[in-house]
Image (cartoon, rainbow, N blue to C red; front, side):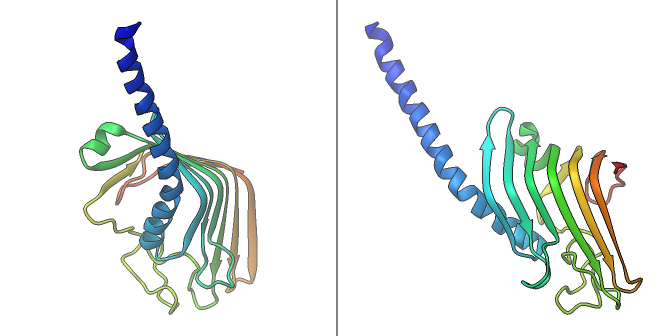
Length: 195
């Protein structure tokens, strides 16, 4: 028993350090992730909590919100729960490959103005008629020095509100279930959508 005492003490210390590190990381991860997403989308992004799991390597986010063009506008996107499972070997080689993204209860609100503008973030969709959203390269999210890919996107219990001022129409799609194939920059994506 004496010869196991020191290895057990070291193991207990490592477990305590890992638990403490995970607790501190959980507190700052949501702030860093929200700041990175805000910069990437050019819109305020908030989340209630974010955590990392080591096995399998994944990130879980609770209450994700992407703001509209002004504080008075409804958010463009709200997601109750998001889960992204990462591919560790790709991450170690400098690429971000997300094996699977699951969005539970997302709500997207798309508003097209009478002049053809949109409430979508400019990095998602160019919006030439809006001073709030200057145009950028059509539909391309620019992430410098990062190669990224999402192998599949799964949406459950989704809702989309589509408002078109030019047509004076609002359409609501509820109970959306969606499954896509691989999503990567400048690659076609196949989507299966059910309402």
